[in-house]
Image 1 (cartoon, rainbow, N blue to C red):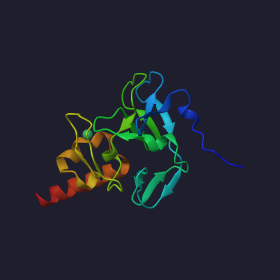
Image 2 (cartoon, rainbow, N blue to C red):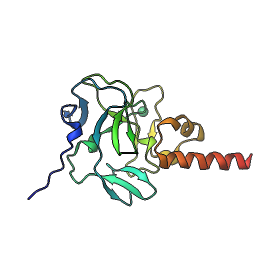
Image 3 (cartoon, rainbow, N blue to C red):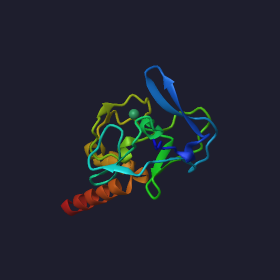
Length: 167
Ligand SMILES: [Zn+2]
């Protein structure tokens, strides 16, 4: 028997849409701030890959199905979603209108990305080079503070302590 991974939470809220060669996640109803959009599968690797999500040092969430929706969550420097690490869910950062693409900021979870790229999101806050949190300046890191994963928040606290000790 083939055991397909079905994400119940996402039903009737989002769909995968093909735009040219790209696939994006789009809302198919209006979503309220903090509403859960989907759950991440609880499967992990000890190293990052293109579609993984960093949970902790040497702990990277992946999905068993390459077509799973969580693999098509694109990056934005001004995202409309965030990851709740308490229950490993993707939630709305603000009210989201039907038809909007779902995005999150990869720099709020990834320390050193397997798949680095240049961002062209056109946000005035664009980070341009998306390589991982470790490559940002202290000011850039601090700006992301409210949205950081517990793992990266701790990295930032340690860096702050080191800077204070040197001062
Ligand atoms: Zn950007």
